[in-house]
Length: 293
Image 1 (spheres, one colour):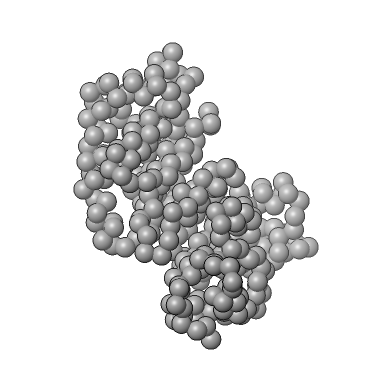
Image 2 (tube, helix red, strand yellow):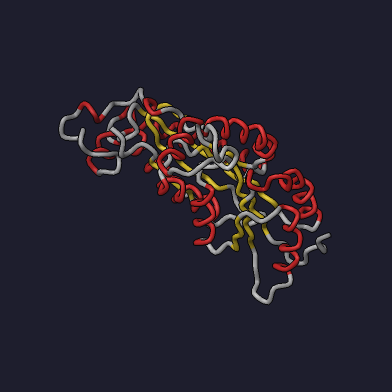
């Protein structure tokens, strides 16, 4: 049993589907100064927590990668997490997921066997893993779908989530620009459709640019319809954000979509970043589809 914590540590459980990006996630957390341990049996987590609590080196945050490799130890995880919380430690569970076909492609490209199907069908292994991990997915504070994310996108998202996040800290806001033709971001809390705004794609001189470019930004912000729309979006967010804070949620993902995800949605995200910064609120931004055509 863990002794009650005098200085509570934050415990981050990184879990999810094999091939969904857990290795990249733990590397990113290490870069952020989090003490990380991969593939430790769940039953040993309380022992490690006690060792960290009494370490000469101050350890504020500890992350464990817990997945289907745990085998029979996986079933004890819920009891272990309850023990940590009883010891006064905040515990957050992050679940990484992806579409079955995306996972299949990643395993095929890496030529690695699935841990539940070393000699058999990868899809069968994925299906079995989904069954075994379903209870952890429902327990997760945040589910991140990495199907449409590059390694760099995932890193940016994790950095914006954990860089300044501490127990009792502020809600972490992430703005995501995307293209509807590439699908909605699965983890979006709020979605704003920008396809009704003037489209820079139809301006020959603006088409090869992105919403980062000053000319595209100027084109949209000087258009009365577009500017009024974005001001209304910002007005709603200013109104709604305190209510999300009162709810006590740790993350808020705001998705902004246009047709392709290169022009209007990018400019809108950058516009909102400036508004949040002017209010003294830090936000992360991810332009998911800016490089896609």
